[in-house]
Image (cartoon, rainbow, N blue to C red; front, side):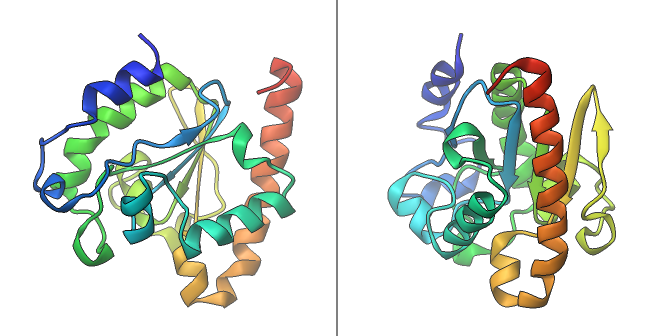
Amino acid sequence: MGLETVHRKYENCTRCPLHQRRTHIVMGEGNPRSPLMFVGEGPGADEDRQGRPFVGKAGQLLNRILEAAEIPRQDVFITNIVKCRPPGNRTPTEEEMGTCITILREQFVMIRPRLIVTLGSAPTRALIDPEARITRVRGQWFERKGVRMMPTFHPAYLLRNPAGKRDAWADFQAIRDAYREVLSETGGP
């Protein structure tokens, strides 16, 4: 079973109420063999319309950050903690994240990332620590089951709070360095 099988398994998911308003389920995209995975909060309006993660304004900022850090977007895997758009782009609830985390865990098993970057507070709480506050833990590495994880600000937050870009850039430089280190150990993405 590969990543496409996981995605087909859930393409018509109705396990939580978020499915009722979605246009597309947004499973994620990128290199299914990448050692680096980015996990955001949930799809926004543009993502729901296109069925792709991080394609709106926040996604455009993420693309610019990745490019500046010399991390090709197509070489990494990008997904969200929930796969359907929360109404009004609100933060996913604990119940919604708890339901969708099954899909994310299956994606982890197929991709086997060595590095995970959580973008924003929701995936940080779901994957690293339920009590975590992004402003306190961003930029720090955590390890879970042999996988290194770093929380950083969500690009949408940076659009609203440009002063956070300096801290986010420092985070992405550390992510880039860790990614290069893993690539040198494994011989490529």
